[in-house]
Length: 210
Image (tube, rainbow, N blue to C red; front, side, top):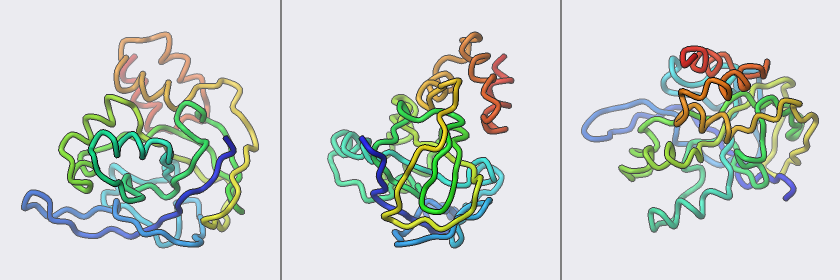
């Protein structure tokens, strides 16, 4: 399937009241027709917790649209995009299809895959489903992040084109499953660490496992 943008979204952090506790989060984003992408992320977009989210290696978040039908079956309700707080919801770019280090042109911008997403319980609270985080970790249907190699505008109908497939071919799905479920798999961890374009955060996580 040819990759295609289904939704483009940005948003600044808002204060939510979850379980009688106030929390600042950038998960609630709104659809937009066009957004300017900079090295640190989209203009008009930000995160609530800068210690655990954001940064140049996590400038853009993409979530595969294909997974939405699965979550709708699991939770028996319509999922409103972007339910995961992603900037780009797209088809033809699942975690199995995309590899760490792959480079894409999206609109005027050029981006590179850096790591899968490590979710927190904010997705459970935001979507009002207590089991959401647990199910995302179990399935490894997390989405993933890009760093920005070339700044530029992205529209909600911009084309997504592959510029370069990383030769190591370590899929986001493979790396995420190792991170979540196979900490003792030293051979696979060493294989992942050979990808120079892996984000610093994930490199540190895998090194700790070794």
